[in-house]
Image 1: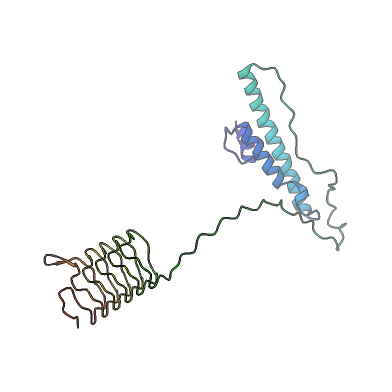
Image 2: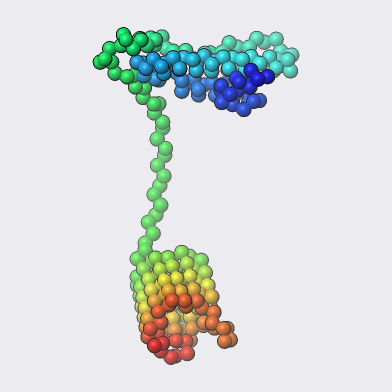
Length: 249
């Protein structure tokens, strides 16, 4: 049983591997250790390769014979098993000379690896236009879109649905957002200088770190009763017109 396990280890397989797996493992390892693929003037590697080939052929022969016999006994077949095709050095292969007889001018044999087929070229993804300044998106449905980092300065977004939209570091300077739905929109570090946010819905929006200098927020929804429901941590509100019409100092 230990000898059988050794054959599986030689072929780098788990015990119980199928005949197809045995044949494939033998083919792969014989290709790796074939002497013709190694430098002809390296006697140590050549001898090691020949030893490996012998072990690989023996392991395949033993496992194949065992599995064929088992298959025959189960199927009560008298068909004799086919003789295995061993990997042997090519007819032109000559054992390396001893180091004393080798010429100093001999160059090591380099075997080029088999060429792999080139993978099919994948189509390039379409380029996303980051400059949307001055565009008309009035009443557009942009809910759940990712507009982070886009330039939407002076764009018309009046009445647009921007709920749950991701607009991290978006540029909305001078943009018209009057009546827009910005429910739970992420406007972290957004540039909203001089933006028109009149009558917009800002409930649940995150304006942390946003630049709101000179923005007009008159009539914007930011509270539920006395509770402020907009994140304004670190936001710059200098000169902004607040929802109640007062100008922030």
